[in-house]
Image (tube, rainbow, N blue to C red; front, side, top):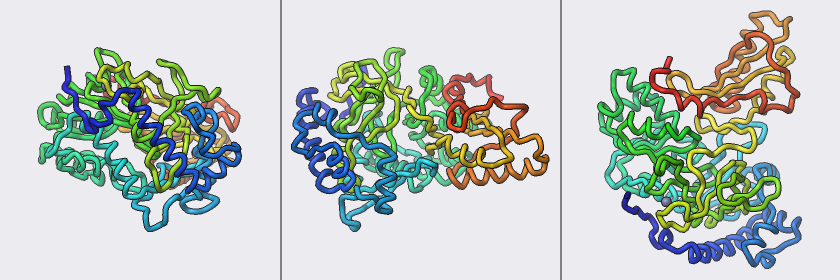
Length: 458
Ligand SMILES: [Zn+2]
C-alpha cells in the first residue's frame, strides 16, 4: 500500500460529484471569457448559431459547441499573424510563446501564455512529480534542450516548483549527460522510454551498470507508448521506480497517481487533470462520449487559459477511457489507460517532434527522379529513435546523381523538421501506393523495439 501523495488536496479529495460541480463553474466562466475575447470562438459560435447563453448543461457543451482542430488554429494564425484572432490579451501580458514541434504541410500551432497561464502549467507539472514521490532538494536532470516548444521550460519550472536541484543538461550529448549524472549523483530523470534505454545502453558501453554505478532512483516518462513488460525490466536495470504522464504542447493532460504505471501486473492509469482542462473522450465518427473501457479521441478545453484560449480542441490522440473509480486512490478525476496512447491520424512523434508523413511525401515524391519510398521509425541498437527513408529511383538515374539526391533530400528533411533522417536507396522495387495513401508507406517499430531483451542488442 503506497501512501497518498496529494499536491492539491482541496481538489484531489473532493467527491466526484463535488468536483464536477466545481469544474462546471470553471467551464462556464471559461466559455464566456473565450467567447468575449477570441475572434476564432466568435466565428465558431456564429456558424453554430449559438451564444454562451445556450450552454446550460454539460450536454449542451458537448452537443452544441463545435470542435476546434489543428487546421482551425493554423488558419486563424494565417488570418492574423503571428498569434491569430484568438489572442485574448494585450501583447504586454504575454509571458511565453511556444509552438508545436516540427514544421510540416500541416503547419505549426502558435500558443501563448500569460504569467497566470504559466503558473497553471507549472502546477500541472509539479502535481505529477509530487504524485511520483519527488521531493525538495533531490538532484534532477532536465535532459531536454531549450527551444520554441514548451517541454524543456515547463519541465524546468515544475521541478523547481517541487524544490528539486535541477541540472540542465539538454545541450549535452548522452555521454556528457552520463558524466554529470555520475559526478553529481543525479537521482531523478524526466525523459522518454526510449531515451532512458539509450542512457542505459551508453552507460553500459562505458563499463557502468546503471543500477550500481549510477544513482537514478526515480524516473518520469512521457511521450511514447510502451509494452507493459518495459516497466519492470527498466526499473530493475536502473534500480529505480518509474512513473509516466501524458502531455502535449496544448496542455498537460494527466499522470499516474502514486500507484504508478502498472497496478497488480496490469496497466495503470493517467488521472486526467480535469481541474486544469475539461476533457472529453468521444467517438471520432459519431462525436458521442465513449463508454468505460472503450477507445476514443481526447477533446480538451483548458479551463484557465487567458492568452490563447480555445474550446473543445481535438487532440487526434487515441485513448482508452475509464471512470474515476477504476483506480481506488479516491481522486475524483477520470482515467485513461497508461502507456497505450496512439494517433488517429498518421502523425508520428519522434524525438519529441511531430512528424507528418506528408512532409516526406512532399520532399521525396515531388522529385521526378524518385518513384516511391518507404519510411520506418525504429530504435537503433543504441536505443535511439531513428527515421529511415528508403528511396526508389527511376532506372535511368545515374548512381552519382542518386547519391547527390539522397544528400539533398536528407538536408531538406532536416531543415523542415529539425531532426535527422537516415536516407538510403531502396533495395529492389517497392510496393506502389497512390500519392495520398501516405500512411501505408510507413511502419513504426518502436513499441516492439522496447520489448527487446538486452542480449538481442547488436
Ligand atoms: Zn489513482
